[in-house]
Length: 156
Image 1 (cartoon, helix red, strand yellow):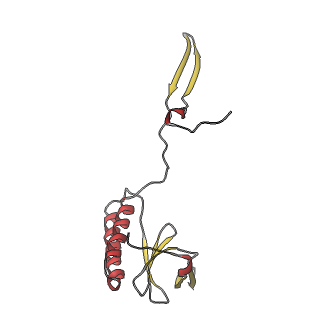
Image 2 (cartoon, one colour; image 1 turned 135 degrees about the horizontal axis):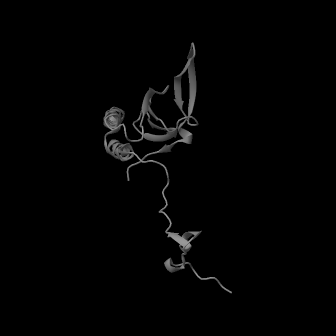
Image 3 (tube, rainbow, N blue to C red; image 1 turned 90 degrees about the vertical axis):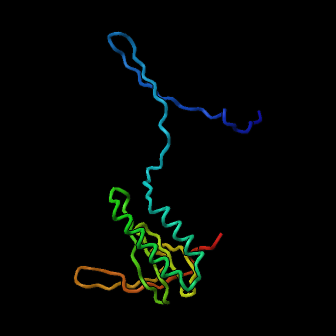
């Protein structure tokens, strides 16, 4: 027997039921499935960051780091005024090659190299990192971008 391609009407919806015996007979409760949700909260900062990247890519390469820094500051200020939203952070560094590095709180970084190109990086894997230890604290001392592992952003 040969299978047929799945169409919209071939999808089955599973309806769950609960049955309970009561003094008046059987009680059956039917529930439709709840819509799927990812459980990952979104943030207004996500869209703002996407627009900032698009705007920076349209700017002359020499202006990109300064412009992006200003746009990130405006995202931080907006999010500070909306504490009910998912937290959004960005820490700025200067790479050993003179790049501007913007490290987010969820393991991603954006790097603007000295030529003004934008790179999406993983905060740990795409940098050689040295640390400074003082007392009980440990802080990043230097970041050397490893561009070979990064993805370059480009205009559409």
